[in-house]
Length: 182
Image (cartoon, rainbow, N blue to C red; front, top):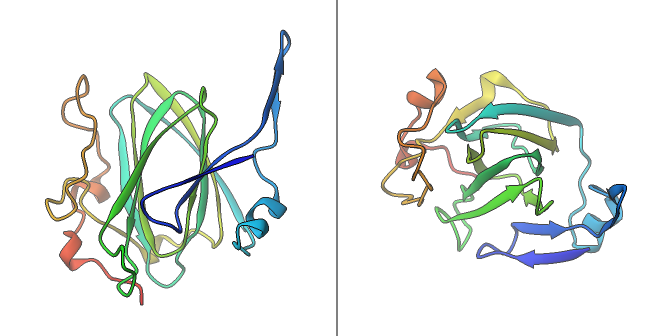
């Protein structure tokens, strides 16, 4: 496994070892000891899988009381994945990290608790899977506007135009109104 550091030290990209031949490939997508070696001691309680078409933007989502850490990857297609630091006492508060995750690059993105998370589908379709450190709590979930000018996230919208959003994301709050984690 290879660890790729990002601009926010707690957010990591993990490149698993891939063993391939003419039959296909094999890789371990998760191993608790990897995270332990990185100082991340967490238990995952839920796995999620979403399928979306090109131009769908999901996020930027976070939970208030049950902050979720997420270990995310793409098993089909390509997405532009973004996390925003909501930890008010963090030196990277309000900053974001983005990465293209794809079935081809097979990278795994570690999103610690205390971050908002979202992604934009770049391919015709994408299958997105992730492990969570706490259960989904719909009444606890909030959204920050994907295009908030304070965040200045450079979403790759060429060839997409206006992204497709859920009603919840269309009514998302400004970053300045977001609940911050201490």
